[in-house]
Amino acid sequence: MTMPIRIDKLKYAQLLKEGGLPAEQAELHAESLSAILDECDVAVESDLVIQRSELLARMDLLKQEIFGQMDLLKQDMLNQMNLIRQEMLSKIHEVELALSIRIDALQRRMAGMETRFYLLFGIQFVVDAVILFKLYA
Image (cartoon, rainbow, N blue to C red):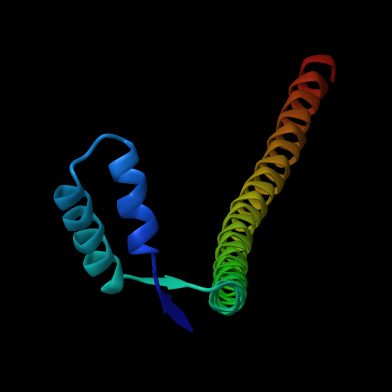
């Protein structure tokens, strides 16, 4: 609820006269000020209390909305982090699998080389044995 601003025109005019303004000017000032102030409204304390309550309620709603948006953003970030984690784990698994295949291939090659080494070593041993046998026989 608002109220107009009221002044005591006579008292105001009297103060202006006492301040040295001519009576006609003092009365004109008082009338002018009264007319202007009649057009103005002033909020009463109950209006301010209501406005404050409404403002606080709006602030609470905004706070809840902001926290809700923050929760959504947090959840979205966690979801994206989980997706990235899954992609990274998948890539790591692919690399592990590729390395495992290469290591297995290297082990087979080494096993083949070991077999050839023993075969060649055995042949060399037989050849050396035959040569020694022919030399000393």
